Length: 280
Image (cartoon, rainbow, N blue to C red; front, top):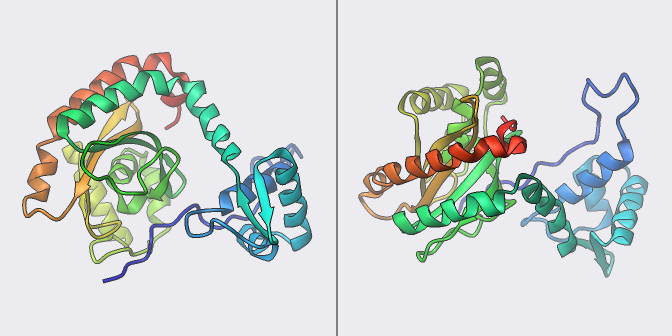
């Protein structure tokens, strides 16, 4: 059975947030350039000018100026009137990781827990409707292609998304649930506010999330929260694997002690990383 791919960042317009509009400090040109970069994805690695304009909600003339500026700066290339990103875009994400020192601090812990449980492990944070991978350690067993630093997956259909959404303050959680119905990727994807609300309540009660075939068939994962110095959930740590074995859920639950121990190790050092500690 074929299923839709989890989305890359959704098409964006560049209207300023309400808080930025009155004082005139919102830089539309910068917002448009960032929207152009975010418009490219695994499903749209190359686009024409008109496709970029449609994806960003801007006019062709505006999209052209943004693309030519990004091309001049080395972030975009053009071949046969089709535009694509260059590897230089990776420097933007690298700046975030460098600013938090996550590479030197988190990666060894993540690599150790991936080795302990013999499955891929990742850390994500919440960004709008999605979770974003900020650290990743692959195990010897095959990992899913979408698990890499910078990847985005829908929060409502993922284990770390459930952990992060369950930790939101009630008004923020209610605001997220109000966005229902959510996209369906498999028969197991929660798509209604009631379905997701019940799952989040259970996750908040248990302190972990388990998903099987919710974002794509064949994918299963278990996740635990990572708390900042003030006790607030700032990230989520998961272990993922194939959902094929009959004991998939039992296998996932067996990894909880190792995941929780790793989360505790990370939490012990988060006071040194204020950028991540304040991310929630």
